[in-house]
Amino acid sequence: KAGVTQTPRYLIKTRGQQVTLSCSPISGHRSVSWYQQTPGQGLQFLFEYFSETQRNKGNFPGRFSGRQFSNSRSEMNVSTLELGDSALYLCASSPEGVLEQYFGPGTRLTVT
Amino acid sequence: AQSVAQPEDQVNVAEGNPLTVKCTYSVSGNPYLFWYVQYPNRGLQFLLKYITGDNLVKGSYGFEAEFNKSQTSFHLKKPSALVSDSALYFCAVRGPGGSYIPTFGRGTSLIVHP
Image (cartoon, rainbow over all chains, first blue to last red):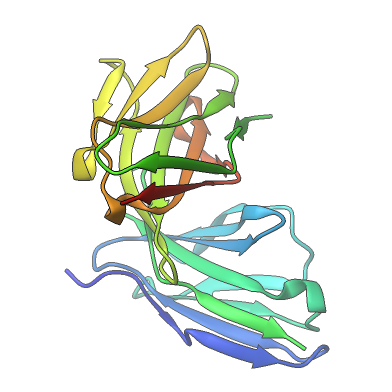
């Protein structure tokens, strides 16, 4: 099976812009989660989607949003970008009933 | 609230020697514990998990971890380190019943010297 794919892999944006990141989970995986990884904060949970519904949400401002489509693909959007949003954004998927997660390679977002 | 501590930012070991990467946790009830590895420019890769049962859990690439309830620890071990094991290792915990949001440690950089 193909692994979790994320596009784009690298992105440079300007403060105040918005950005959309995409994630395609492993085939058959219905749960998709998003994380922000930074050297200072480590891995921070953003949100989880299951069958197109947001099931859990981390402690991030409303500028961070996401959605999941009927084919389980997911997107996350960050509006009004700030310099502090520069990070590696990781997507992870898992099949129902499985607790470990399978991560994509991430999207490296740089905000200038 | 649940938490994970990885007390060492970096662990150095010579190739062929045993390695240990430490993890302690805090959670209400029985924990679900995980180890992941991250290679440069890659996402995290699942190594092993403890849910219940035998305290010694075996995982991928010869890694194993020992669950110690009294010390609330879940240290990652390997009998003989390889240079290719050099990477960033993350411990994670989920609460009873696998309550969803996992908490990750800050990560430990393992450097295996030839």
